[in-house]
Length: 386
Ligand SMILES: Cc1cc2nc3c(=O)[nH]c(=O)nc-3n(C[C@H](O)[C@H](O)[C@H](O)COP(=O)(O)OP(=O)(O)OC[C@H]3O[C@@H](n4cnc5c(N)ncnc54)[C@H](O)[C@@H]3O)c2cc1C
Image: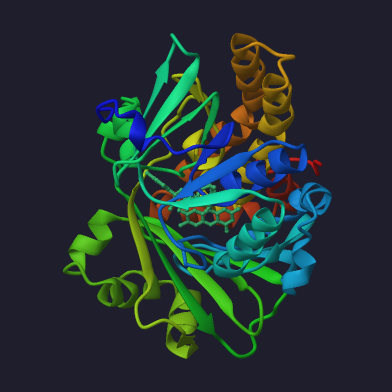
């Protein structure tokens, strides 16, 4: 549905609209503003805020963020160089991380990029996008906000994350298929936990990541299914006690840590189904184009890398050097080339850790096969870009 045409509602505005101000949206806005374009980001929440996310960022993003003038070193993140994995029964393996990464909360990272974008002249409109439609007659998009205002722009990027009512408006097939996955995040303090390691602990129908972020805090974030939550009477605390704590390493973490929020952050209906990078003339970037399983710890890098792919093409389009069909075809190709394999391998790896027996077998075999662990990591990560 698009709101009735009422020209008095149109906001004067930017040539580029970015729908959603997460990592993909903030990075693409910064990049395009740096190339001299007038950019507005529409974001429904006010910064800073917490999100469900494991908060481990692959170092592949560093050259690009530095080029955008947003070096995350300013946030004093944790430098993460080692990886540990445990099976539901607590069997472990350890491996170095070839490229490594850094740990910083989304609360800090998104606020940091928001401030950088403001300083570069990006306009922020704090509102929910209700609808977007392309008008072929004027070669423009019409974006309707939930408060009744409307925006017009020749270029619109969909950076609104993994799932939004906008996906229903765009009739994207994944939206109508239910997904069993939910995500939960806590910030913890756990004295003695090494700041240079990311650990991944499996449990029945789920896995949890834990790694350091800024200050002396840890991010503890897990993906599991509604079945586990239902079996615990709908209580997150009971599920952690009854299901996660069967893994002895998770039991230790849960028993010995101090929780830093009154309530954890929770999201549901997390879908890993394939999506299209271009929909009804919108360039989709980040999770809106495709979500890699969190097991791989690469979704944030992909969101930022997607911005690096979209911005130079969008720049040429806005300068009149690339017609719209060529822009869409080039972005779709670049996106598939960069992320297609990573997403397929991610889905396959997630399948390996589905059931307890298979998880035991996989961890049991991989501990004697360190080269395979590193190969899997390379397949689910990209090279540095920028
Ligand atoms: C359990 C879990 C753990 C994870 N752990 C990691 C990890 O450790 N490392 C990693 O790299 N990745 C991880 N990820 C993935 C990572 O969080 C995402 O890939 C990343 O946040 C994608 O960024 P984005 O900009 O596409 O979307 P988001 O960061 O989700 O941003 C989307 C923005 O759009 C806004 N929005 C949505 N709809 C509207 C609307 N209608 N109007 C206005 N605004 C709107 C939202 O408020 C939001 O701010 C994890 C994911 C999950 C589920």
